[in-house]
Image 1 (cartoon, one colour):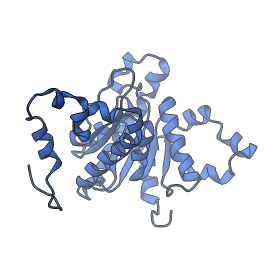
Image 2 (cartoon, rainbow, N blue to C red; image 1 turned 30 degrees about the vertical axis):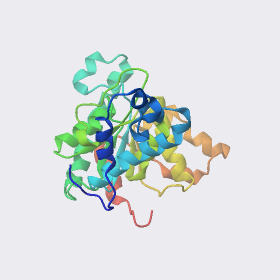
Image 3 (cartoon, helix red, strand yellow; image 1 turned 90 degrees about the vertical axis):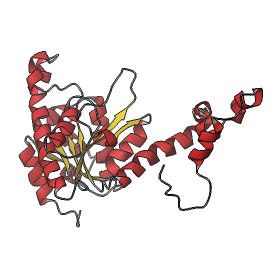
Image 4 (cartoon, one colour; image 1 turned 180 degrees about the vertical axis):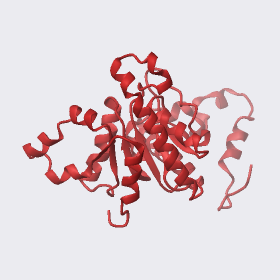
Length: 273
């Protein structure tokens, strides 16, 4: 192992290795004797939740820093939307129609990644939830361009593995939804939202709320599918009722195609946002 320590103390991995070679006695077999940072049972205790939250925030942060990822383009969207070539297997006629957004997501991600490669893959890196559907389309488009992409997966009650197009070294797994959503937005230079379900809406409104309340810098928030979103959310009613300011509607842009979304990115003044 490379010795990259900036201090003179013994490396923790050395002690972890040494602890596995100790004599087998009643004392060394006792849970109390385990090194705290190698004791999974201890780390899973209720009282250790703050530590687990910190670890889940820190691990992807350090890896992305080490990989030189400086900014991302986030792609939210439904896990159940199939690829166009799987249209005949869609569970509903509406999902079959929504395959067009899988295609647009793939093209958008490819074009964004081609631009990202001009900065050696450090800026505007595609970032998805790492699962199937629109998320797969985003990672797949990045792979089409020969670039890297990020997948932020999460443990769910049903089995879910990362899609095959996520860059393996940038494929992360989360327990906490809140920390996962932080990582979606910490480096975001743009947020795109495709049709989806509860998870997609949760992610979209999280980003929208943070931008509206100026808890994060304003970035392009682009919704693919005007008809879909206008039927799902009565945006005008919110403004008319006064529960949001009419100016808040300007935080959103609606597009149908990858080209329209790219034009918004090209016209965005990041210095003044």
